[in-house]
Amino acid sequence: MTIVTIKDVAKAAGVSQATVSKVLTGNSPEYRVSRDTVERVRKAADELGYVPNVSAQNLRSKRSGLIGVVLNEFDSSGRSMHLKLNSQLDSIQTIHLTFDGSLLSGLTEAARIHNTAFVVYPESTHPSEDIGSRFLDGRVEGLILRTNPTTQHPLLTRLDPRRIKMMALWTQDVPPGVGYADIDHKSGAAQATEHLLSLGHQKIAFFGPGEHSGNAHFSLRHQGYRAALQKAGLTPDPELHTEDPQKVIGLFRAGKLTAVVGATDLQTIMLHGDLVQAGIRVPEDLSLVGFDNILGAEFIAGGLTTVHHPTQEMAAAAMNGLMALIRGETVSKCRTIVPTHMVIRNTTRKLG
Image (cartoon, rainbow, N blue to C red):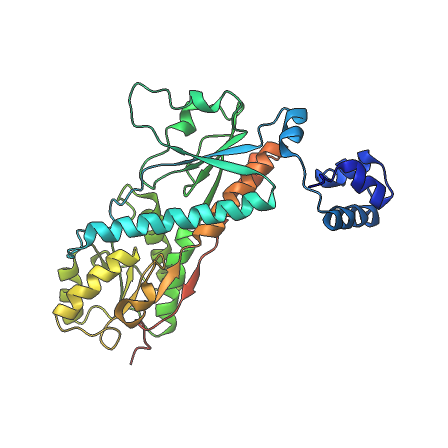
């Protein structure tokens, strides 16, 4: 098989090899290569089947061309809520794998667009291992660190962002010099609450951990719920915030409740099971909204109305932000909060 070189592309496009190099490495704007020339070079490269020698490019630029991705242990604290299901552990593991799969899918697509690659590192839990040393020898150009909502990733404080660029994934709690990509937990919960308000509900509970749970995601979601009520002129009632399904049932029977926003889909599923056992119909008697849009949510309670967690988009934003940091972009422009959206199914209805 004949290998197509830059020289071949230059000859076909009628330009110099230097111009071809500038176009194919993405440096044409910097060197003010005209749009017509860029299109001519790319067309010639496509027609000839030119494939860049990434190893040679990285050797010349003294870059590894690799991104390191560290996926920490998935934190399910507060998510299972002691689910009364025989398959509780299986459910948590399934969500773990689905979440990580979506992350990797988003990272892969973004890496392809940037013509780069990433390697996933297992997180060491051995106390004697210097978990930061492996990333400072030039084998990776930057790091994407998936955190959990209760603790800050140790590498964020052990590594100097002046020595290696870092993006934190699924958090907004980062040291100076570090970028992040997270979803808009607060706005998502506000959207869920506003959806219920639009259906005429005013007696709306928040089911799950809240602002003082130690979990940043739950804190933001509870804040969003409260903000939406206040925006509608309603005063949030502390009695309507609970983690106890039996209290929800009691509030409903006392006429103090017509709808519930769950902190997660899992918690909402658990609540739905208790409501069914108590003879309370969803949505005829009580409307429910979850958060996360987990795998299978469309089959839960006839179709769970929920807030979609844009995991793939969040992962892509992390990769885009890290590549921008590597190019020299300021960290303030590499901190992204990805918007959520409602998925309206069958667990909510208009009041009355």
